[in-house]
Length: 138
Ligand code: DGP
Image (cartoon, rainbow, N blue to C red):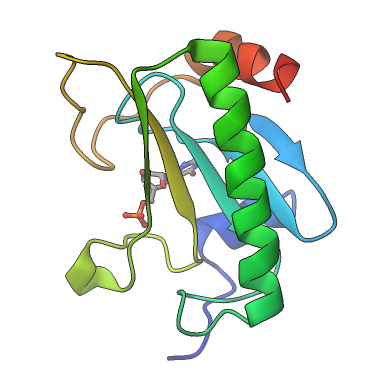
């Protein structure tokens, strides 16, 4: 399927809509998920226009995974979760809702269940304090 330039992450990458940014380099961007499954839920996207892991270049994937690890380490240091869930969906049948490849970094704590995937939107102002902690741990 052709890449859809009007998807919400393409708009974030072009600066057309805001995000609570965690990290950016030449090839990747990491920002807070506005429908977090847990406190500190971060998304990592490549700047390359690719819908899913099947269409992303090997170079784009390598860059994205390096950022996933970098941000996961910062989440671990900043929030000290019991564990960190890292996941990625490909195509709607697998649960993907935004057609620009992204990894989810979701800190987990024993006994605290996840909020549902992509359901409840929170204010950017609520995400900012935890984002600041993660940024300062990069
Ligand atoms: P997926 O099902 O893997 O495609 O999940 C997309 C995620 O993106 C979901 O957890 C909710 C989040 N999301 C959707 N729209 C926006 C948005 O406009 N900004 C941010 N920061 N996250 C979004």
